[in-house]
Image 1 (cartoon, rainbow, N blue to C red):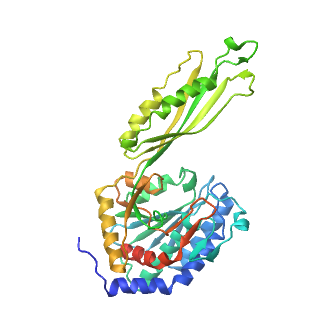
Image 2 (image 1 turned 90 degrees about the horizontal axis):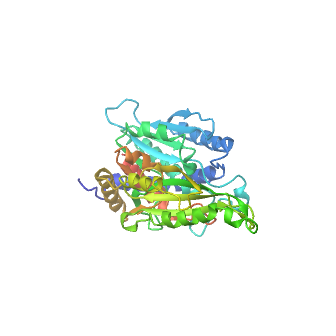
Image 3 (image 1 turned 135 degrees about the vertical axis):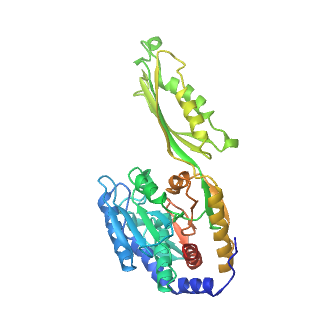
Length: 385
């Protein structure tokens, strides 16, 4: 690979990004102030409609994928309509974890070199960066390849409705750039993510009065506690597999031997081949008390994004562009998932964390660092070019 050097090309991208920073921040503010919690379709659709209009304003050819349960999906195509080159898929989401009304206690604001607000980092700033990068390339007549921007509306709740659309578009793409936040305050791009799954382990026992008929009872809670110790043992840190029992519920009163109990379990795997192994462990669970019954449901719902040669090649290209733009770019792996997990599992080179740099995603101190906005937007433009 020929490494990009500091040149007129990268210099003009950076100058254009700096010149547009005020406009970019205005776009971030507008996106954040249209609250869009995943479970409120009308709210998400309002945000989708606004972003769709911004895409049209920048020459995007917009298509909405209508959904019944969650918000509509936004697909916008930029660049030449006819091309022999495969498109780049820019992937993001417009839904957030924040309920309606959060802006009252957590308004969008700029202070201490940061922009603050619900969803600003995860991931409305990344969407604004993408639109700005596309505008810069269009203005400089450097958008010579097709680019598809796909913004989903159910990513924070599992991407159940958007996944087929994501996979269909990704399968025809040369590469996928995910607009999720960069990793940490150092702003690393993500070249690997763990796969994510959820299991529900339910136990039915035999209820009895704990004082009068204690011996006739068979506690679902006691049985589940024994299972919990066994399940915890499925963790294998050397393989990158973690199994976390997040919640346990059961019983009715302290003087009743519990008839029912269940546990919700989060699992993470670093490699796709470990999914079958973990599934076998859960399906092989057997009761200690044969008067109880055990039921297991669930499984992996996001495959891991593994560090493939195609993804490494994309990162090396990005790192070279970053050096030409005057900063060092690192790579990182994370235990969290994104829609990039789906595209990577298809074998499509996928580079993640190409959005804003900041901290506090899903937390009250959610914020982005303003100093990184222009350089990272210029980097995104360079990768699209």
